[in-house]
Image 1: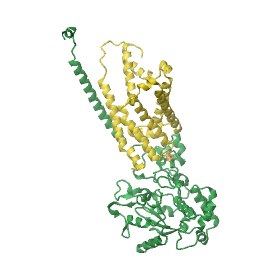
Image 2: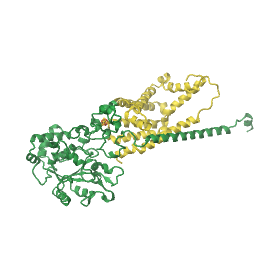
Image 3: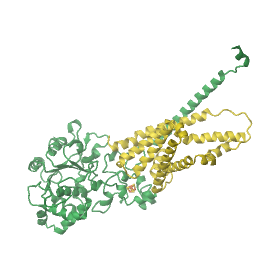
Image 4: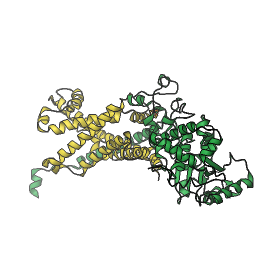
Length: 378
Length: 219
Ligand code: SF4
């Protein structure tokens, strides 16, 4: 895709109340052009864009106006917001908060009660068709959605009302993207992911428990720069972050291939940093960028800290048969089942064998030898 | 049903069902044969049958020169397949983890590149024996559904397993689910098809060897 100054940009025109461009805003905040260019190339690399695109991206971002974002929090734990706001490199990842005008967000906004709801309505009105709705948390639909309400409205109604005029919806975290913990067995509230409810708007899933903050920042930057959504996989996840498995990029992979595994959390293998597959690592089944982008400003990621991957960015990871059970191990009580089946089989086999023997000897008993005379009589 | 639900189903309830049918089926068929026994042999034995029986279990596993001359493809491809298949099945660490869960004990595995190679060898050998069977008029005439079904049941776990390992075609959870499903199909039908030869072949060889031993004949 060619980017120049005339690139049509739906998001760019999504001007917030402050109609200064991002470039002007950042300059006013004392962010140097150099720092901004560095950030742009960082985002470009995260998005798997060629490095040559970074200046164009920076230019495009500088000209953009702040994107209105309405952030809805449903059945969630606020961990996703924590992940985003506590990133260790504030000069870089915090920049995303300069790119967007967060018009509604429970945890971060100053207003509360009706004033907060008022802010949401105002943003929806002012940026009709242009605002982005970010959702964290799943939506309970059982019993008319009464299990989670905000200002007397069910999550279900708020979602429908807010997404109606949105440009796009971003489901942040595994709860919003795939249902997460609320949807885990037995799912008492009838929780569903956002994609099940929003079918008429593009939905980007950024799963993870929590998701990598850089994924969120880069996706928003992508929308701001190009005015279109990044390329998504079959589960609606940006391919640039979820295109590869943790296992394929894991630095412990050579141990897996050599057959060197930690058997427990404190054995020699664990101390030597061998593969955690036998301790339940879900890395092979998990598509995420943890092994490359890492966490806390690129410091480390769970496997590097000695803990198997839980597969938190995959659908249904809570119900995958236990975090510490190897992926190839059946989830039932198979040893007992096998023993009982063998016992029952032996008994049934003996009975069948005895029956055949009885039939055989009965047949032999009934057998009587025919003499030549007898034959001649007939 | 999502791919993850499918995987959970194949790793959970479906595996339990397949395991019951497989183990109980094996036990029933094996014990049935043993209980039925052989007809009493009243002749005076020339030699004990036991040692000869055990020896024959192994000696008949090795290809005989005559067969090797007459049907080299069957012998060579057959051997390559059996070794490749057993190495893949028994020495891949994730498989050993599964055996450990069922049997309560495990054993060391091999590095993945060797397993990968063994799996490919097994699949190539299977294709060779299939083509050989189809091209040879006598073999084709003698083959029926009961011969092609076990071929398919054995080939599916190999190919799906290889695809999971290399993360090809489908996302990992879906492909792994398919792989496990194909193994479950194999397990369910195993006791009721010619696949049973895995165990009965040795029993048959023992019986033959033991009978020959009694008669003092070399087997
Ligand atoms: S630790 Fe996990 S992700 Fe890393 S190589 Fe082992 S199984 Fe794969």
